Length: 197
Image 1 (cartoon, rainbow, N blue to C red):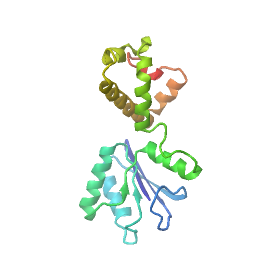
Image 2: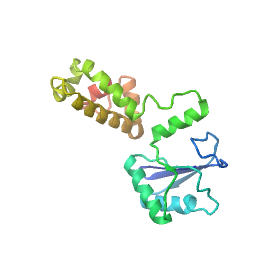
Image 3: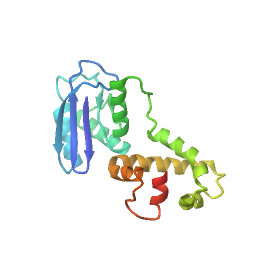
Image 4: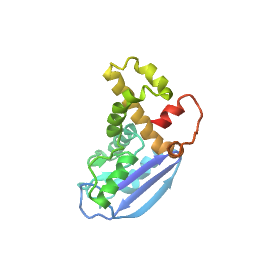
C-alpha cells in the first residue's frame, strides 16, 4: 500500500508489509516515510520512482494513494500512467474515507460508510435545511432557497455545504473545533449559520 498525501508543502508516503492481500485496508502498517516538497509534480515523480515502478511490486496488489481532492487523484493516475504505461488497481480516497477504512479494519464492526462521508453528510444537511430555515441565523440560506419548494436547489445547496464542511475537516479543523465549543473564528455574516449547522 502506498499513500501520497499532499497538503500545503508536505506530502507523506506510507508503505505496509502486506503479502498479497489486495482488498481493503490493512491496519498493520509498519513503515512511514515523509517526503517534503513544494511541487506536486516532483512529489508525484518521486512516488513513481520510489514505489510504483519497483520490479518486485505485485501488479495485482492494490495501491492506495490518499489525495485531498478527487481531481488530484485523476491527475495523479494520468501522471502514473504516462510514466509507467499503465495505472491500474490504484485507489485514490480522500483523507476522511481513508481514515474511516482504517478504523473499520481495526474495529471491524463499523458500517461500510461513515456518517460523515460527503454523501451521507449531503443527505443529513438536505433533511435539516427546511427546519433550519426558520432560525434567524439562517436568513441567507432561507433567502437562497426561497419558498423551499425546489428540492433540486435544496439538494444542490446540501451537496455544496457537505463538500465545504468536508474540506473544513481537512483544511480548517480548528474552525470545526471552535464552532463545536461555541467559539467564533472568522466573524463574518456567514459564520453563525455555518457554526450552527
